[in-house]
Image 1 (cartoon, rainbow, N blue to C red):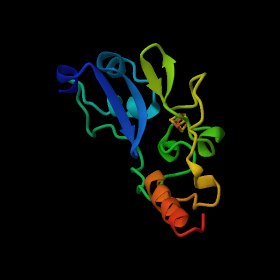
Image 2 (cartoon, rainbow, N blue to C red; image 1 turned 90 degrees about the horizontal axis):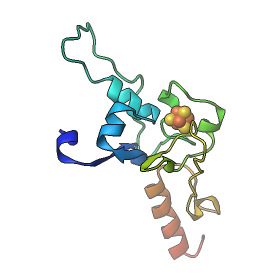
Image 3 (cartoon, rainbow, N blue to C red; image 1 turned 180 degrees about the vertical axis):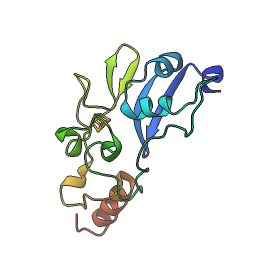
Length: 140
Ligand code: SF4
């Protein structure tokens, strides 16, 4: 359905952009491991399966997104950096972006002022709200 109605597709995970690119390219050659898992879970016509393929684990609560890459507890390609540094959706080839440390040139997400006195746990939206409240109260 997406392929019939759009030119480009954004794959989101836990409210964050995981991958962005032309629909045909993402379907045929997904770059982000989450996108790869989604594409791998689509049953093929004529294929006999006792069970559908799925991505192990479940989506995190939005107030408890893991540090680093949000997908790291479920990713089959996870390595140390993924657990501590959050990748930004960066251009990995012309017209395509992915937020994954597997690709050279991917940069770290610059976090808002949350690191300077505001709480650092929870979702970005939740942190911003708390930081804004702290600033308004003069305690930031
Ligand atoms: S950054 Fe690491 S954990 Fe996240 S998708 Fe890429 S390899 Fe997996």
